Amino acid sequence: MSVRRRLGPLLLFLLLSVATRAPFLSIPVLNVDESAHLAGSWELMRGGRLYTDFVDHKPPLIYAYYALAQVLMGRGLLAVRLLTMLVALPLTALGLSAVLAHGRRGAWAGALFLVYGASFLAYDMQAVNGEVVMLLPAVWALAAVRDPDRAARLPWLAWSGALLAVAALVKPQAALWLPAVAFAAWRAAPARRAPRLAALAAGTALPLALAVALFAAQGNLGDFLYWNVAHNLRYAANPTDAGEVLTRAARTLLPFLLVTAPLWWAGARGVRWLDAHVVRLAGAALAGSAAAAFLGLRFFPHYFIQLHPPLALLAAPVFAAWTRPRPRAALAALGWTGAMVAGFTAASLWLYRRTDVYDETRPVFGAVAARLAADPCRGDARLFVWGFAPGFYVSSGLRPASRFVVPPTTLSGFVPGNRSLDAASGSRLVREDHWRLLIGDLERSRATYVLDTAGSGLHHWRGYPAWRFPPLWDLLQRAYEPLADVDGVRIYRRRGCADRPSLPVLTTAGGAPILAGDRDLSLGRRGGPHP
Image (cartoon, rainbow, N blue to C red; front, side, top):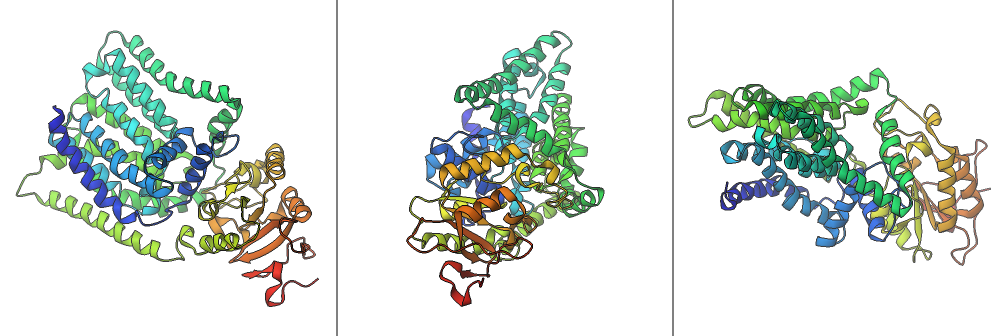
């Protein structure tokens, strides 16, 4: 297909991407992962080392992607969303079109991906999560072996494997499409099967080897391997109970299946109209995507994003075959699709205009940032947030004082997506060596401020107050003074950083701090704490 003929579908995909994503560009932060990725990209842009100067269990290329967007379009999440909306998503849709050799079916595949990719709550589907970014190389990996001829040629197989490895360095779940490519390559021709699989394996190994070499050269290969392999395996083995699993499935998985029902219905019929090679490729990719959706049995809706591309491929022939006058099934499917994307767009915009639904919309982020900005110690201060709330780094603009921007399970026992655990039952997951790293970071950076977010209840952190964790609490008592309590977020400031007398940290008999709500404790307003 000529370049000119490809520009038409690409323009269509660009318009659909803008139409479905632009309404959310004005929302500062859509979910907690965006804040964490942004904070990580800032550390990377400062010359910091991932997994040593910044720790999270996400692969390195998601932070590189965020950094690239900001280099091209300016600092902040708007740049990341613009790059995703204008480049990544349209090119991903074009990759799906390429799997079906473009044409009418290819146009429908790309369009279905974009529309259904916006047909759920924006908290997961509109945010720039790793799943969205990884699909660009992952879909083109499928396009590289889109027919038996390509799937039998060693260079195309090596290229497909390399693209999947790049996708896995954005989000590990992309590797679950590797068996689909291997299966398609195995069935492409009866001869030379072993060399084909070897070429696929070699292509996959190259980007991974380059990543290993890079982190080895930086001297932090062990950190890279721990957070991306060992920790992620432990994270996937989510110690949840059956009740929690059923509750989460009812809240997210079942609604998702209902929303995407036309895709599943059309996909089941589309296999009869597709080439057997494409059916094998898309069907195996769908199986891998289903496995990704069930990892850890958390059922986060952004885990379901990986299902959209293979579903769109399988469903495209049915949608493309409908001509006017359209049958009732076509009208029902198209009507349902339009209702879902319009309904979820309107509902999500309404939800984000409220301040009591998503934690990211709560005024506490701006209020804490304003309180810190007015403090005489603000200057080149460093901040540590004790809580699952990296949004405070984003709202304040302060540099993290520790590598642990999001205190992981190994510090707190908190497991995201598992409400059946608490601080006591999760304590077996805590590592003492990570606590030594944290306290060492805070001492070396001389962290100016420490926020304890437990009182605010942000992201289910209410059961993890600082006083329950002796190493942190001892440091706060020894080196910090209580500064303010803003909507439950307790602000501590390093003693001696301002020319004012320090206040002792007062505690109850049980060891909990006595801090009054929403007042400046350093000035003792509204009576202040009493000894």
